[in-house]
Image 1 (cartoon, rainbow, N blue to C red):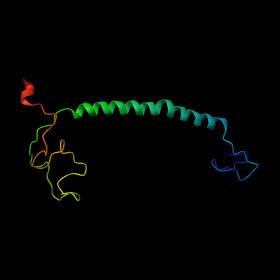
Image 2: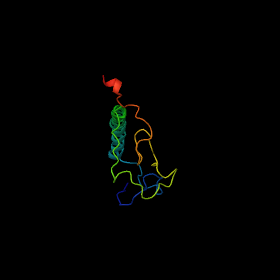
Image 3: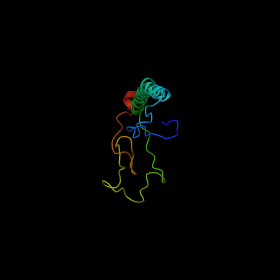
Image 4: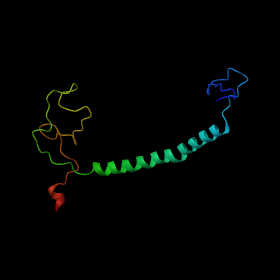
Length: 118
């Protein structure tokens, strides 16, 4: 805030000079109120709706069968071992979805079985 003489007062602390008017003006109070309303009625519902859409899409994607493992020479190469565990698994390794250099560790629970095709 500025007084008529151009001096400023820190906005969050009590005013050191009693001659200064350190109260925020009406425009500043109104802008603060608008941002609070936008956060409450626009941003938070947007986050909730977006989260719901993402979670449903990821749940559908998880139920699809995983791609077949093809041992390409340039993929799954380990020039230096990972510094954790046995050195072959990534930090957030999923044995169902992430393949190792020799293939997947476990069978796919969502794979279409030959008996199910008929």
